[in-house]
Length: 378
Image 1: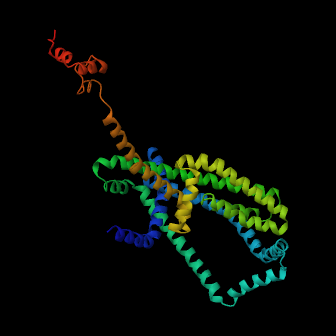
Image 2 (image 1 turned 60 degrees about the vertical axis):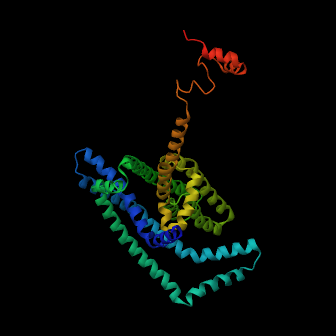
């Protein structure tokens, strides 16, 4: 039964993983909308209007950022795409110099790899078509998620009560406490992500501009977006600019790498421990290991919500397992504690006001013991 249950759970998990991620992302969006609606409600504004203002405000901020950054980002992306052939040629020469191989051999291998795709256009067109369909599906799913999150933020009580009612009545207050911990943890994670993205973009852009690296905005925006994936996003964001700087000179590549290492150190020692780890109550090492595990279970999209998933698992384990064990252990210890006034007389005690040595002397002398026990009490 156990093996069959585990097998069934594994099959259902693989089929429902996309749905579970969609539900989780919807809840993540709904939590800040509900918090904003509650604040507006305290000021006398109805919840539907407050949630709508929060949603429109968030969309407006995103639209403003897109208006300010995307045109420059797109221009630099086009320029970077046009420069890719020259960058590849420069990297071929650098790789040949480092390894001692002939540059023409390196170029031949690259050409053979490219010809595998150009000789069979379906191999190239297929992924491009899939990417286009995925983008359309993602945009449609995002609109549906925002609408659902809005309605969840207007009336969260029925959903919360329905989840709480699944538990026995004595445990429902505890479940509400757990849900409140999860809500505060997720809000803290979102605040930390926003602060981390802003700090990464500003520091990366300033550093790359100071060393004169082209496409600074392109690389800074890319690094800021990858911040959502803790630790590993910073590593992935550093690879393209370092390779691009290597086409200029090894010295500039080292400077670029130094900038990303400095930004990553600021992120690891300041932003994540103070802003994110303190709010989510998780050790940075646990976050790093958990991201890998969540990525294996939920795929690439799961990396962007890895921290909420980890915080949910940690809080649930602590509340429903660790604290339960500690409570049972405390009860066991209390039951073993001898209460005052009890147990003062044991099987060998003749008088409570006499010590054990006196009782032992009576046991060694039977006649004295009989006289002692038979003596009248005054």
